[in-house]
Amino acid sequence: MRETFRGASVCIVIGLIAGSVSRLLKSSYLSSFLEANLILLLIALLAINTTTISVVMTKLRELSAKPGGFKKTTEEMKWSIIEQVALIVASILFLMAKKSTVILGHVPYADFALEVLLLSIFFFLIHILYDTANCVFELMDFEESKK
Image 1 (cartoon, rainbow, N blue to C red):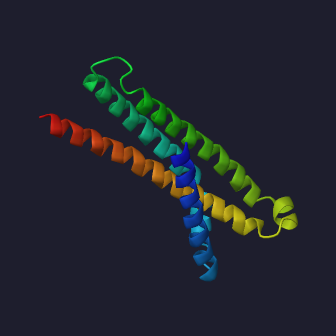
Image 2: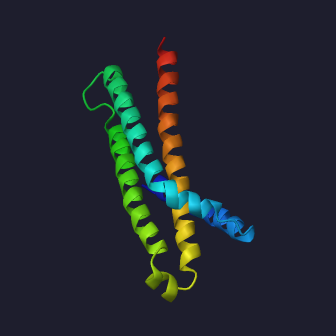
């Protein structure tokens, strides 16, 4: 859990930096890109990660001498799926808020804050993808060391 908050915090800082640079350059590319593609990217990467996790879990089951030998790993992988579903829901809510004239008209800097949050979600998504890929490489290294 602590690792999740640390990763999320780093992603928020990166999102803040990227959003600030985008504003400084007066570029709407990141905002337009996220508005058009973020939900699709989140759903596609959820599908990819779910498939990868199922392959990894199958391999771990083959390697495990006792049932439930990788309980902590299983819990972490379930947590990863829950995180991704939560990111999809949060993205939908933030994108709706970003187009809300009520919120944008009454909350100072709401557009910038929402852009930073959407960028943070995008970077956290990349972090989850990296974490899943890293798991695959560690499993491959483990198999190589057993030979």
